[in-house]
Image (cartoon, rainbow over all chains, first blue to last red; front, side, top):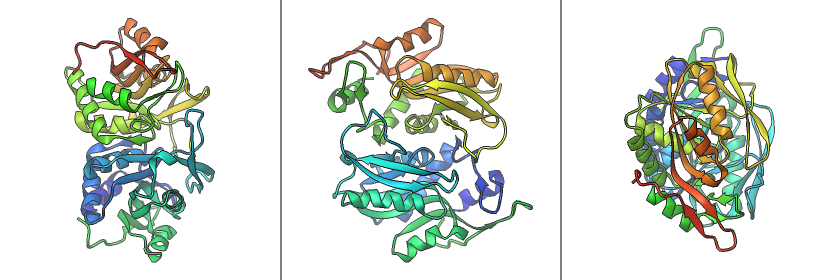
Amino acid sequence: MKLLEEKIRRDGVVKTEDILKVDSFLNHQMDVALFEEMAKEWKRLFRDCPINKILTIEASGIGIACLAGREFGVPVVFAKKSKTSNLAGGMYKTQIQSFTHGKTYDVIVSEKFLSAEDHVLIIDDFLANGCAVNGLMELVHSAGGTVEGVGIAIEKGFQGGGDALREKGIRVESLAILESMDPKTGNMVFRPQPQQS
Amino acid sequence: MKLLEEKIRRDGVVKTEDILKVDSFLNHQMDVALFEEMAKEWKRLFRDCPINKILTIEASGIGIACLAGREFGVPVVFAKKSKTSNLAGGMYKTQIQSFTHGKTYDVIVSEKFLSAEDHVLIIDDFLANGCAVNGLMELVHSAGGTVEGVGIAIEKGFQGGGDALREKGIRVESLAILESMDPKTGNMVFRPQPQQS
């Protein structure tokens, strides 16, 4: 998606060969007008899928997932990173390792909000090695639901998680795919995406 | 706001005299169509204020804040609950005690995203004793910014945080204010709000 690539080039900061800071518009301050355009693009890309629910993970997935929920006209569920005293009843559970923080989280979704009838679009801000997406897919499958696809804002193509999912037949639509980043020059190379706007 | 009060009566669960579960539409599964109506109501209530930024706190404030950001046409910043390795540079910091979880969190916002020029609307899902709102106000004031007001989905009027803020001259617009809840009968009493739709 050209609009997102341009935003990343203009406002993203390459910290290392692996780490891109986009906290000025994606995951600390949030450019909601951009999120709305991203949501429209996911809606266009997944227009043939019978999606009735969006699943994301706290915290930085929630904003883009809510704008996507508005565009698709479906509810959004966010997976939580630890059990809280205010969540009673049965939970679907898995563990997810965070690339950014080097930690492993317990991740839960209440059994009330995922079912065998659900056709789920998974939304997240970043896709690196694929741990978060794999965990979210496991939660959907625990409920007997169907993963219709995965919508990602920024995929780090060089970390392989997205292509590994595609090889398994999962439909992954990343609005920007970085092939490489150079922390010395700030240079970024994006994978060409002819089908996208 | 009648629409929200009706939703709370229909889908909210009174767990104790203090705790209301609204995880089916507000803070685990999210009813984005309802969030859009809430955002429109905040926009109507704060229409005279020169708001240029919305501030909320992760995780359950983010969804409603993003829909509000769309309605106001302003960026949204979410305060983070702990320092992460991926956030470099100066931070505004405070501590917030969570009523629900009984814990105290370090809460941070990057200095890049709050300034003396900002006229901020604070948005959150719940207002109980007011700890979260007071913490977020402190972050805005640390930056020299102006708090234009506070938009809350559900205020627990019987816990006093909202009225204490109003007595200090802060404009607090809660879309539903619970005066009491009965866990035996499930009965809820809302404070009348003549100015709201």
